[in-house]
Length: 201
Image 1 (cartoon, helix red, strand yellow):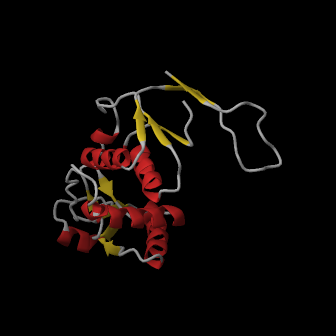
Image 2: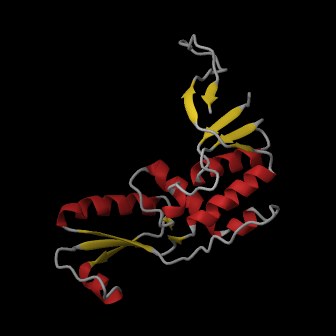
Image 3: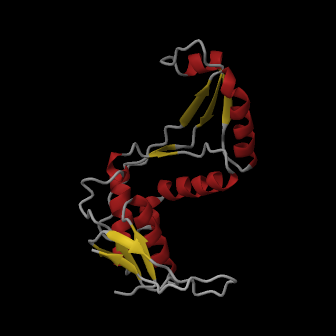
């Protein structure tokens, strides 16, 4: 079997990649290799489903901003796809708390997040106790709250991406990858001398 793009693993990340590639209409043939099509043993359905923007790396923040907006309008983005599950997005916010040792890092992260357009609010401990009475620890000195963040049902999101990817032309194969050899079609100074296919069973 030869395909233009092979994705190893069809969980939420692999299925999302397959969806965006298929949606672009410029990716060629896409195959997703997944050994557990029922996802009984997959990690995606076991996840908490948090969607947050509180990261410390510029690229992660930008990607999380895109993800948050996409999940908030998931049904609209996939309106042309049949049988898309409700991912049950809930905008409940994300709260990070730190002790004295983490205060400077949290402040630096919040500054970067805010500079990239994230609604991230620093909260001193007395205000944390007022707004979140269940949090009672004397060693907490600072928190960062992003009210726009939230939660989804990760299993529903996985199946939404998978159904969309399949309806847009991606193929799912029940198999397990045992080895992989890749060939770069673009010229480079160094190129592999090996032929280039993925082997799976």
